[in-house]
Structures are given as structure tokens and as C-alpha cells.
Amino acid sequence: MDQPPGNSSLPRFDDQSRPEGRRQPLHRAQVVETAREVLDESGLAGLTMRHVAERLGVKSASLYWHVRDKDELLNLVADAICAEIRTPSSTSSWRERLLELAWEYRRVLLAHRDAALLMASTLPVGPHRLRLAESGLATMLEAGFSPEITARASLLFTDYVTNFVVEESRWEALATTFDPDSDSGDAIREWFEALPADQYPSLAALAGHLTDPDSDSRFEFGAAILLAGLSQHES
Amino acid sequence: MDQPPGNSSLPRFDDQSRPEGRRQPLHRAQVVETAREVLDESGLAGLTMRHVAERLGVKSASLYWHVRDKDELLNLVADAICAEIRTPSSTSSWRERLLELAWEYRRVLLAHRDAALLMASTLPVGPHRLRLAESGLATMLEAGFSPEITARASLLFTDYVTNFVVEESRWEALATTFDPDSDSGDAIREWFEALPADQYPSLAALAGHLTDPDSDSRFEFGAAILLAGLSQHES
DNA sequence: ACCTGAACACCGTTCAAGT
DNA sequence: ACCTGAACACCGTTCAAGT
View 1 (tube, chains in turn orange, yellow, brown, green):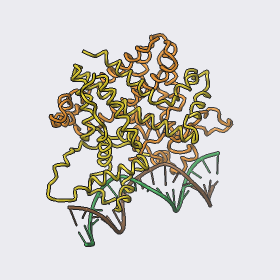
View 2 (cartoon, rainbow over the protein chains, first blue to last red):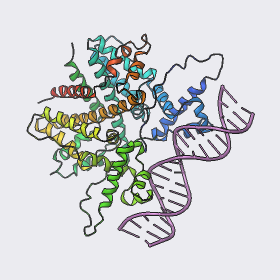
View 3 (cartoon, protein in one colour):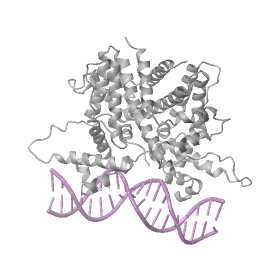
View 4 (cartoon, chains in turn red, brown, green, purple):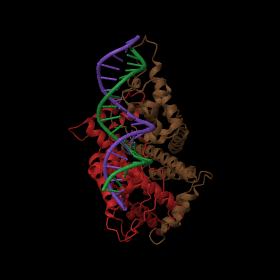
């Protein structure tokens, strides 16, 4: 295991303005698309330059002509996934729009294996991820929140969704590891219940709730907390 | 780069109950302590079995006698770091106790390189990390919150702190990469300001606030939002 | 009981060389 | 312009063998 990347550079996404005239500009898009397929099948740990190259019928060294390094490829894949996000219309209240945006973002993250982990490992610098941020910021600015509150709350909200899905996916993977048959995560709950009650009385008592598999409901709960806290700052 | 680990098993931390009589039980603690030193010096990406072994004057294969695998070692290091957390006393209100716990947890995370990333990559199954969770849960239960709200809010709060520090550290590393001299992150702010204003008007306008380097203030803001939202559920 | 040697099956990346 | 061969400098982990 290694550390997530994402700290190396701030790329520009101006690839639509190519030298023109040539007719193999598919190549870079092909690499990204293939990487997305590898991610879906093998997860982030299985997304290696060598596997992507192999699937393209090419040697791994060839990828470095199309892409600066693996970090850039990960950024491109992350942005490609975020292209699926449908930004909410402007007809509803700021609460409804933020809530809709949160559910929509989560939906897309859950649609691709390890997508949340990829977002957490990568800087939000692609056009579609910027579009997601822009949507949240614009919603709050229009609602009359101050620039400072808007900026901070928007980061808070995006990070909430991303990290919720990271934990949600990790929990699901763990539960199926320990309970290959049932999907209820009983083994994990029993582990909490078996904790020494003199040292960890609350943990043992709340084992059932801490391992609650209803992640939709848990997601809604957190989002509601954030929105309620945010209302405090409404102008 | 690889994917964070943490999904492999649910260890028991009962190492104080050893077979007795022998007198080299320092070994495992030595390995963990050395790994913590390597983490502090080289970060999570530099924390490899081979480096830990080398620093101990031993071959990497030897580590596998003391530790099942790297994931277990990471769990032990994570818990060793969390041993530094001083849990707040019970004399104050639930708000004050949760807030104090959050600041204290963040303080410890910031005291060790990549500590937040390590917590995010690892399951909270060690005794000191359980103690941290127990403290938050007990605080809320005593304040009269329902078991369900307590469990969900406590997870929300812990994850908030962890992920805030992950982002905070990432941002700091990025800022010093682009502005080696100044610590103000000017280059990143300018990158946001240079975004096409017709597509990303809010992002460009809020560039200054989005790159605000006052992370103490941003941390306080998020914690206040969570506490305010939580008050809604007070019994 | 503890450690080593040596290997296995991987990584990301570079670079001269081919076409 | 694009790809290959071959290497470099790494990884985590296993396992027979030493002491």
C-alpha cells in the first residue's frame, strides 16, 4: 500500500484546443476510458499503468506519451466520472438544490468502484469537478450567503459527501469480507458488542447503531445536520 | 501509488496478556516505535517495511515474525499516535466537551506527519482509538441524545476532524510546493482567479476565500456548523 | 524463538532505439 | 509522431534455511 497521490501539479484542461488537422486525438481519451474500465473492474489498487497498457495492447512505457504521469491519468479519470453528475436546476430553494446536488454526487460516486476514494486521492481541478463546485457555490451566493460562509460551507459539503461514500464503500467491502453470505455485517456488530463493557460501555451498547447498514438514512442524517447548521448563517 | 489498506481484519489488542516469563516482549513495541519514527520523517508513502527493517538493522522478512503484515503495523502505529490524545474531563457541557475533543484530536494529528491520512487509511480498532470514540459517545449519551443520534453524530464528528486535517495537510504541502518561499499559497489563489469567469464565476470570485490559509478558523467554522446542526436533535 | 537469503510477483518511470 | 526493449529503483510477502 502507498499513499494517495494528487499533490503534484495544477494541470490545465484545454485539450479541446488541439493543433487541428490531425485525426488521432482519440488516443488520450482512449487511455482515460480504458483506465476508467480498469478502475471499475479492479478498483483503485488494481488501476496500474501496466494494466491499462495491457488492456490497450501496448507497453506501459507508451502511456507516457499521452499522459505526463499516473497522477495526471487519475485526475482525468476522476473528472471523467464527474462528467456524469447532473447539476440541479435553479428553480428550487437553496436547501433543496444543495440536497439534490449531494444525492446526485453520491449516486455517481457509488456507480463506479472506488470512485469516492479516487476523488479523495486527487485534486478537484478538472472542468467537471469545477462545475460541481461552481454549482454549490452559485447556489449559496444566490441565496445571499456571504462569500466567506459560501466558500467554507461548500468545501465542507463536498468533503462530507466524498468521505461519507469512502467510508460507506469501505464498510460494505469489510462486511462482505466477514459475512460473505449475509450482507448485514453481523460479525462486525458482534465484534463491537464483545468489547469490554467496563472500558467501552457506550461502544458496546451502541454496537447495533454504529454498524447500521442503512447508509441512505445515515447519509440523509449527516446532510440534514450540515444544512441545519448552515441555516444559522443565513442572511 | 496504491490504495489505502485497512480492510483486512479485526484484530484483538490484548497484547498485555502475554505468555509471561519471557523477557523480550519489547520487540513488537520497538517495531511500532520505529515505524512511527519513519512515518514522522518520511510520511506515509515512505513508511515501507523495508525502511522500518533497515532502521532496526534487520532484514524486512524479519518483521513478519512480529507483525502479521503491513496493515497490522499501520493499525498499531495509528493507535500509538492516538495514545497521545487527552480525553476531556466530564465537568463541562456536551458542546464544550465535543469541541475540546475535536481540537485535541486535531492537535495530535497535526503533531505527526501524515497522521490524519493514516487514520483515514486504517480502521479505528485499536484501544486508544476506541477510547476516543467512547469519549464522544459517552458525552452525547450523558447529555440525553438518543442512541441512534449519538452513534451517527459521533461518526460524523470524528470523520470531520480526520478528513479536515487530511485536506489541511494536503493543502499545506501543495502550497509549499508552488510557493517554496512564501507560505501564503498565492499561486493556487491565482490559479482559481484565472479560471474562465463565464464558466466558473463563483469559483473565480471566491478564489481568495477558497484558498484561505487560516485553517484554525476554518476548522472552528465546520465544528460550529456540526454542533449547531446537532442541537436540533437535543432532547 | 528469532533472523537471513533468496526469490516471487509486482510497481512507476526513463530513455535510447526503432518505425 | 508514436511505440518498444530494457532497464532502474523500488514495493509487500513467502519460505526454506540457518542459529
